[in-house]
Length: 409
Image 1 (cartoon, one colour):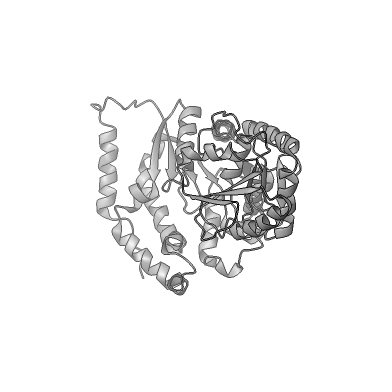
Image 2 (cartoon, rainbow, N blue to C red):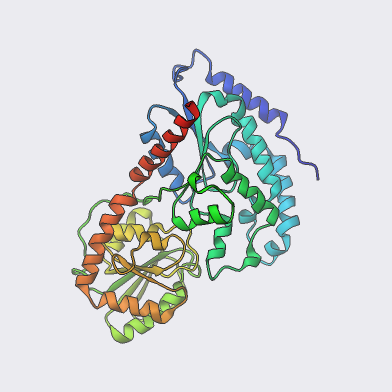
């Protein structure tokens, strides 16, 4: 099937918007002030909002233009969207029908949509690139770079990083052709900013990117962390908190089996489940389900230990929030979690699916309030120094300014 270019109507609309933006009667436009472009898709678990905030703060000398791939680029091109649905069904249709994959997950994993977004971005920003100092995109589902404009990527994953997870089935990789296009995202960037070291390792090992162009800048919490007094009886209440909507992927069933062993040793231990709503009924288990982000803190400060024995985790915001409130964390030694949790210092890391090891770690902490306090205090210190959006913004600004100076020399 032929690959249609962006419609003439779409290109004309963008050109008219550009003319209107440059009109002298527009009092909000400073013709001498350069811009930066933030290219995103949707909310990205609220991360896009935080990135927008720290870019505005740390690059205040520039105006910022936010480009949403779905709202600003694809919405005016229904023909491309419908054609891509055909390509999704052609490549992944059987898996979609059997429920192994969702249509939404597959939508951005076709070579067709990758190429079309690249063309659309050229029409959207290309003829205005002289207005911009640089562009930066979040996630690595598309290539938002424009020829002649310095470009940066900030992501929490690569697709091939899934191969690092013991629970991942290689048969669930997306098409090899799409993965080859994914490589273009990293190669087109002046710098690839990643949230954790395992993703950086993947960018280098799986995609052949020069290590000098890969920088780990970490990430911050998506809720405002306001100091609160703990309400856990000085870590003596033996309460565990789990946070996660995806019960299976976050290791919920493993936690339940481990909690049964914990109760044999510590009958007064309790478990509070936030996010997920599994159909279980056990003594000591309270299922809260979904709560507002602003309400999470009230549950964390009542906990002695946070636990999330996840099987796949590109980046774990919940453990960061727990540590920020001085709650030690127990999780699996996969993905970004070894970056976040210092084993034996701010919490424990255990093997995925190891019920006995998980139970032993929980029993060890719940039996030792003083250790919980020490782990929690150090955890909060680590979060303040590394895992705040202000710290991330400072790191990204420093790296970008170095790259921009290179271009001026």
